[in-house]
Length: 377
Image 1 (tube, helix red, strand yellow):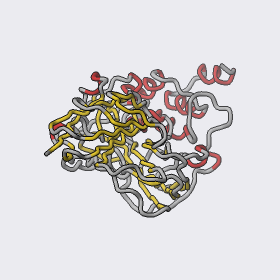
Image 2: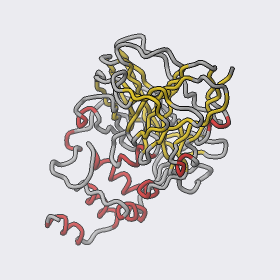
Image 3: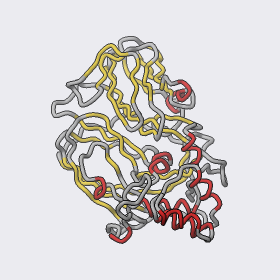
């Protein structure tokens, strides 16, 4: 460790000044940092702003991390690491949660234009993920997952993110090939970041907040899917998007459970879900007709566990393990989608009945990553 770091650790200081100076060096010490942060006397996380039309602007150059700073970090990580040092390791959100609503898994239709202008907001909201459970979510557009974006290879996406939350946020599209330090940079409350990209490959891709610590932002709900269609359309099908994510929750405060960063580091989730609500498609199944081709865009945003996707009583006619249609495999029972990955699964529903679709890693599947595909006559 450099001498200046040793001097820092040995210097007399208050807990807060120690954590602030540690954050300024870009150091990340899992576990230890979380424990120290919980000792900080900083005020609780303030409520987010619901205002629209916030002004655009980039973070000033003097707020960027110093070149050569040690530790695992992202652009502007000092800002976010400092926030967690000052305010603790759990999320918060104010306001009243609405009623429980099933997340519609139906894929959006193919894009009609070759250029899309997308403007989303980063927001902290209380979100009901079951009739009994409300979480203090960090979100894109107020939901977990955020909106599904759909385009074609070569389309132009003109994207803007406006931050309405006290914590810095950013956007990382896995379908983009772009300088992340510039495009995926963090912005403060009231600021916006804009960039343009054109996807080169078709497939099912993740998106998520890329601000540091990334684990906290993904684990708190800032996730979603972007579907990129190939130049020649795939065969007609009933199409559904399943975004798997994990929930690591703390004790409820006024009926709202925060997300817990220390539990995220332990990688033992309380719940695992498709589209942000554990088990929602068991009570309200996905329905198709006998003879339909069914296409699942399965995106695993994690933040940590994989999805061994399987449909009980069926086999997949086709699984695209990369950009369709050139790399398909056939006659597949189960295939693993890595955290941060996405794949396309197809079957022909030629038998009527009820077919559970699951994460066949059942230690996670039975925590909520399970639903029913009902094939009707």
